[in-house]
Length: 192
Length: 192
DNA sequence: CCCATGTGAGACATCACTGTCTCAGTGTGG
DNA sequence: CCACACTGAGACAGTGATGTCTCACATGGG
Image 1 (cartoon, each protein chain N blue to C red):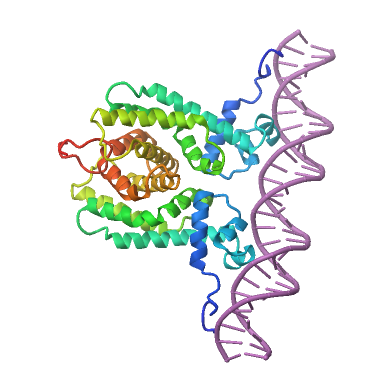
Image 2 (image 1 turned 90 degrees about the vertical axis):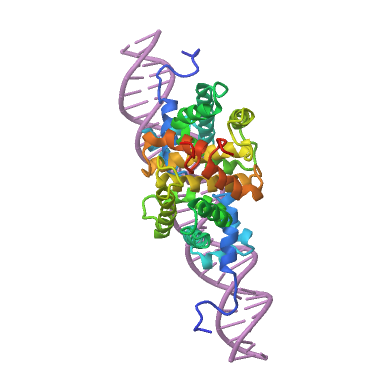
């Protein structure tokens, strides 16, 4: 089976390991490699065979987060229909990746010196483009910048994921809470 | 001068050390005690004389953050006038503490096992009370919970502080960006 | 059946950070 | 002037995580 990139024994499911690591590190960002291994149900040795160190693990997690975000943006069809509906779809599709996003959002400060992954730039551009489109169509207000809209959505997604994991709000309300607060704000609409 | 709590030599300004530590740890949450000391312009030995370990430092930072938040809430007079104006005052007064708040917001996950400082509960209660008041007066929408409003404000403050420190948005826009997005949302108002 | 692959468990040295200590230098107040 | 308080610099061992290695075991394919 030398023609296969990975052995035929299937061995440890790399995606599963990343899943477990994301779930654990989201809750405890300082978790040990040993804890990460235990959480994935494998030994530290095996973990280290797949990810040569904590840094490589975080990088892989970052790649996973980028992949999931881009898939979510694809599924949300940001350039179709009213921009507000596109935002709702985006939040809904991003929900499964929100916890991982929140972890990476805070962890990225560690890579301060180095250049950030180009994937984030791509994602930022797509999200910003949505807000620009909404401003151009007259749906969104123009006194706030697309860059801030983008940051704010990330912040709300992270806050939402954190609040859900802490049990302060119900998971089923996640999408509605974030999308509607972001779109409509806290003020009651006059015409409602 | 044994009657004084602190020596007469004024020595290292404890508040200044906390300031520097907050500024550094906000950018790099894993900074070493040595780095914290250097950032404050003192030696590691002196730092350790004032804060017996990293844990004590973070606790002191937490106490400082709580103190500043409560002072900000006092200054914002949350129970006076329209709730929306109170929110604007709150965001404005919280701005200087936002970076520190963002750091503590992510760092608190490390204390997961232990009980959280009662100060945060007090602050949460005061902020929640504001949103409840706004809902009762008909200013704020009632399909979102005060708990989520509170979390969302924290998230936006943290995002704003982070975006400002990264240079993605201008510091002078901080208050307006956060308060107006939170209150009015991204959608353009009909009656505007 | 036998071999190859992947795994778990553990030992081991290394490294970074930490907490503690000592010593010398500096400035202030009595 | 002297005593005192405080600081900086450095040495020191302890601790925990890490990276690496070996060995035994299990499983699946030829």
